[in-house]
Each structure stands twice: as structure tokens, then as C-alpha cells.
Image 1 (tube, one colour):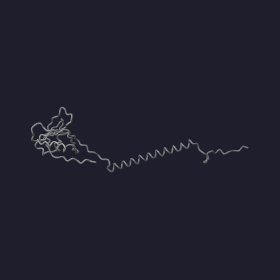
Image 2 (image 1 turned 120 degrees about the vertical axis):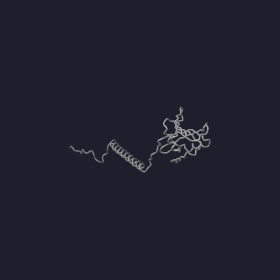
Image 3 (image 1 turned 60 degrees about the vertical axis):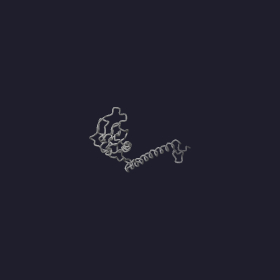
Length: 175
């Protein structure tokens, strides 16, 4: 009379509840997303490391001294101020970077010998400038400016011996 039915309800052909299917798909999606993100980060790290190793990253030499220069022309040659300004402005090497911030003609009489005035209490920048342009560093005079709003570090007073000032070769600009 009593017929016993099989209690095995987990037949492979039996439909599963909708919530468990979504949970399983969502679990797989999260697993794939995390795995894909890990692979993407790994590939980026390898490519970035290879670019550095192949020289894409480069170091920049920063000069140890910065000279903000004022040029005072006391030679009597009017066109000389512009020529020296063009030649010296923007010069840079491992030791010094020069920026011409002011140029003018001297109101005084002509001066026979060119020299450099340090506008700071320390004369290191002015002495280095003298070495670079071929003047004697021992002739540097220290006269700090009271109202130095242009932050001038040195003044080049150009005299009748302006031919002694050595031309500086500027580096070609990198692209």
C-alpha cells in the first residue's frame, strides 16, 4: 500500500533555484575580474620596467649654482650689451646656470678692465661666473644691493677689454 518514493531530489535534470545560478555566475565573474586585474597590473609593471631599463627614463643634471646676471656696459660699444645678453642668457652646464635679468649702459666714464660685482655676501656664484667667461675670479668685488627685487646675484661690468670675455657655447635644446 505504501509505496516508497525515492527521496533523491538532486537529479541532474531537475531545475535549480534561480538565486543559486546567479550566485555561481557572480562568483565566477568576480574571480575573472580579480584575475584579469592582476594580470593587467603584472603586464604594466613588466612593460614599465623594460622602458626604464631601455633608457626611456633619464636623469636631468641640475646646476649647482644659479646666476641671475645684470650686465652693465661701460665699454662705449652700444651693440655689445645685446650681444652679451644673448650669448650669456640661458647658458647652463653642470656647474652653473645663467639668466640675464637686466642690461644697461653705464652712465659713468668708460672703464678699461671688465670685472664682476657679487650682489650677495657670498661671492661663490660671481667667482664661478668669472671662471666661465674668462675673467680673473680674484677681481670679484662684493657689493650687495639694498633693494634687490630682481634677485640679481652678480653684475658684469663690461670694460674696454670686452674681447677678453670668452664666448660660452650653449647646449642645443633637447626635443
